[in-house]
Length: 374
Ligand SMILES: Cc1ncc(COP(=O)(O)O)c(C=O)c1O
Image 1 (cartoon, protein in one colour):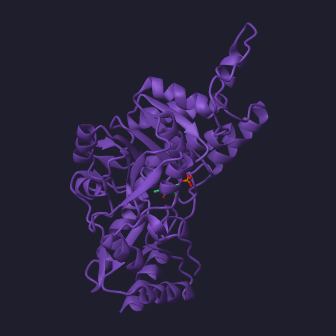
Image 2: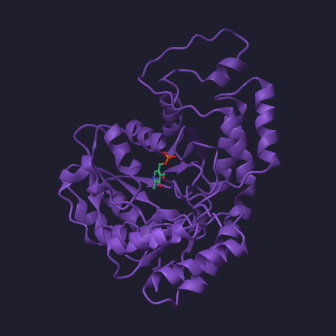
Image 3: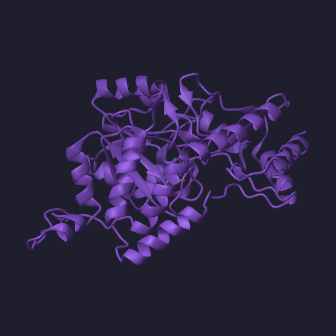
């Protein structure tokens, strides 16, 4: 057996969609990008969606156009992929690391409050592994302190908080379409917001700060001369990516449904195994299971690594749970003391989960985990 940690769920429809774009001759920031944005906004219940090249650039753009910059502190969980903090640095602000709830791996009002500084202007709340954070109290807290709240929803497309999809709660939310995510366009990202003014700023920011979009210029019947009143970036998505994204969005219910079936089977098989713990799934969330995470309770980092190696020897690819950004070289001087993060980054792993995973493959993983962790 050779079982990867993830595998995109592609078929003929994606191939045909790509071919159609190539044949159309319009391959970047064109009609397919616009269509993908419309499909995405309506799927999550947001007024606007703005396509980007990745979640990292989406986070950077969201911070920058919101006026977060030099001298500002932005609270982020350390228990996240490094891009969450790097985006703050790209915006020339300072990430301040907060700890997480051990049961959900997510920020809480308490952990955010502990990380507050006099310069805190914003917080980035990650829906880790697709499991939604408890948004209502966090939104209330940020609102009462005048903090901008950005949702890092890299992993969270299709997940719901209190019956509403992530991206539809009125905050700025940033998604990823990297191949490890629930839907993929190869690389890519999306920002959702209800604020039309912000969406316009984001569209200019991703397009070199240009006053007019390619689409508008192309459709104009009189000559349009553009200007560049702001400094922007090239964060444009291609129509090839967008065409794949539109097909992937149609498949979202099937993809999430399959992930949930696999996750349920893991949980049934492993929840009574001594020394293994899963995330608690609060009753108010619908979880897309972008990742399947287990804590090897009481295990040292060395023991965890030994188990990962034993699984790899059986042809099973795993990943360490989630990194702790504040231990990486560029962030080591943060001074953050985060005991939950320290524990979870050392003793947890992610198991393979992807829609095409067979029962046989999953059975092999379950048997391997039981044996290795015994
Ligand atoms: C929580 C989180 N934020 C941001 C990112 C960055 O996403 P991208 O690769 O699309 O830039 C990732 C990707 O792994 C992630 O898991």
